[in-house]
View 1 (spheres, rainbow, N blue to C red):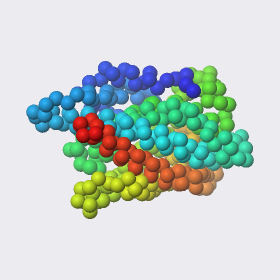
View 2: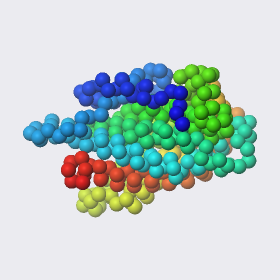
View 3: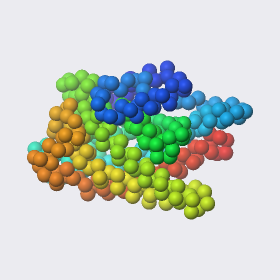
View 4: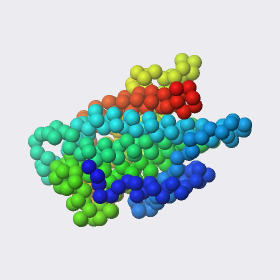
Length: 338
């Protein structure tokens, strides 16, 4: 099901961006996470261009670095798509239940008594942008990280996740809004929800909650990757540098994701309310959290925590185990060992 606003309009101008501009672009993207900017300020030029997949003879250090950048970008692109598609298909019912529990009282009643009725509502929009957006996220994250090693492990991860999130939500936000409204039983099917958004607000309607999504996603992703990478470094040190087995990656990813997402649940509630019309379209997520606490109590800020925690555990397990396995295979293919 296609949305009236296609993500490719944001990505196409990026083809003019050169690889020389890539690192500077990512740094600017990370700086934009002060949340002082509006969605309109995220220009199409902020999306990096894929490094060319060509391997010249390794006659110098710089040539080797360029080859490594390309391998990291393209293997991240494929691995991101695979893990995201798997997560969407397996975990969508839990996401539906979580979204319905987070709605305000009057809107929650619109959904009816069945928390899991029509549990795959909104799966079409989720799948439409899920793999491309996740591919972009991991390609940008891995590309920035490979070129920002001078910032140290933690600094490189924070910068990489920041730049990747800005790009991810430019592509993902339109279908995320439609998906959330479908899960809430608002505006009918996906096509009707998209048409209603377009009629009411035009293109801007599809970027309702963009800053709220960034405010939620960045601390969650940053803490999740930092926790996971700390475990991964420790495991490799204890195993003498051997690759992390899929089962270990699944356990570490599950615990990292559950810890990060549980702490950030109030921000998740806020962004859900903004996207489904339970709060003003231009509401700021952080003040909205305070407003919900004042009017409805702390319980409302942790609505949906049960399916969210289960989903986070499964999501982390699927994401990191699938990602590690796919990326390892893709690296081997790209350097001629596959």
